[in-house]
Each structure stands twice: as C-alpha cells, then as structure tokens.
Image 1 (cartoon, rainbow, N blue to C red):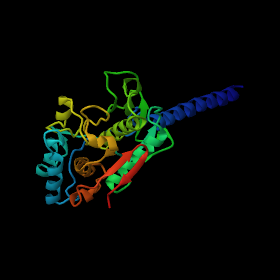
Image 2: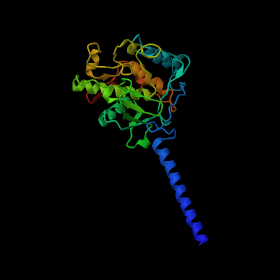
Image 3: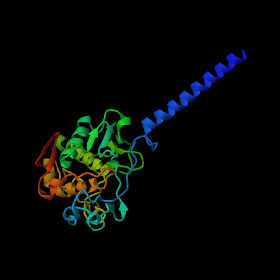
Length: 289
C-alpha cells in the first residue's frame, strides 16, 4: 500500500510538472521571449551603420536625399554619413526586424483588410528590391501583430515599441465624406507608414525630428510624413494614390544598414531617384528596375 501510494504521488507530481512546463512553453510561443502579446521580437536599438553595406560616398548621397527640405526629410539622419550612426536627435532609432532581416507580421485587424495588409508588404518589398516584409498565418510566427484599438488621444494609428505592436483606431477615422478610392488610399498610406516605423524609419516631414510638416498642419507626398488626401490643401499628387519618394527610399536604405542583419536595400535610389512604387485603390505599380 505504501509503495502504491508512492507511485501515485510520483504520477501526480509528474502530471503537475508536465502541465507547468507545457504552460511555460505555450506562454513563450504565444507571447514571445519578452512576454508581450502583440510584439514577439524585442525592439533593436543598436543604432550603428554597418560600414560594409555602402561606401562613404554612397552614405553621403543617401543622407543628402533624407536631409530633404523644410517640409520633408529628417536632418537627424545626416549622422549616418558623419558619425555612422542611425539616430533621431541623438537617440538610436528602434526597429522590430528580427535577426533574419525580415519583418514578419500577423494581422488581427478588421479595419485593415487582409488584402490591404498583403499589399502593404508587397509595397515595401518592391521599394526595397528584396523581400523584407512577410505576412504570416500564425501569431506565434510573427515579429509583431497588427490590430485595432479603442479611441485614444485622437490618433489614427501607431507603431509601438512597448509590446503593443501596430495599432489602429477605427473610431478616430472621419473619412466617410471621401470617395471609396481616397478612403482606401489613405488607410493604406497609414498602414504602409506604420510598417515603415517598424522597419526603423522615423517621420520624414522635415527638420531635426521630421515633424515640421505635422507641426504646421501640412500634408505632404512622402508617406513617411503626414500623408492625407481629399482636403482643400492636400497635395494634388495624392489623389492618384500613395507614391513613394526618393526620401522614403533613401531612409529605408539607411535603416536596413543598421538592422541586426544589415541589408543593402533600395540602392536603386542612388542612380534613379525619380523611380517609385505606387498604390492606388488596391493596385500596385512600380517604375523601379
């Protein structure tokens, strides 16, 4: 009887141990090593430009493009050529790209349709000239998650680095007066924009923080700036869709050189800065070779 009781006790302890280990493994797989549900890959903030990706003259050329003008570009990125760091006003720019050099996204959003999410990934891949964004079928396969949030501080959406992933606020979008095409293009521009932040690209609206245009209430054509359509003072070009600019492409090139796995991206902008990727009402076209 004593021996039987000992066997039962051992069996019970074994079940408890297996259950505990199963819980830990499941918790790790679903939430990730940083225990954040919507962001399984920790933000990388190394901030160093890999000098083997671009020559010094190419780095200078890229920073001339990203320097921009009063209402486009970001003068903080000048340090990529002078100090070989990728920073915003002295602080390393974060990204969510994993050690494989690819941003893996999973979407739980109903505001951004599956087709729009796939198009946003294709948009970035065409701009990069390589596959840098993929949409995965399971949340545990992702670096981070796209999802919808509640009304919050009047923002339309945002990329976070605190484990909350890419979040959109459907209740804050007051665009029902726009055409179906302009509604879709604006939403797609916002999605492309937030994925750009996940790739490590800051705002590109002019000045040290890239925020000049936003502070002045001005919409511009760079999708990494304050992009809008359908208003009295929004750029006429935006009526024809979301068209990338040389500033957007050059910023991607610099960002890729600072990833955990540095990559040479969008290098075509060095010789063909007028090339572009265009999204318009569910259709993507490209003039990039």
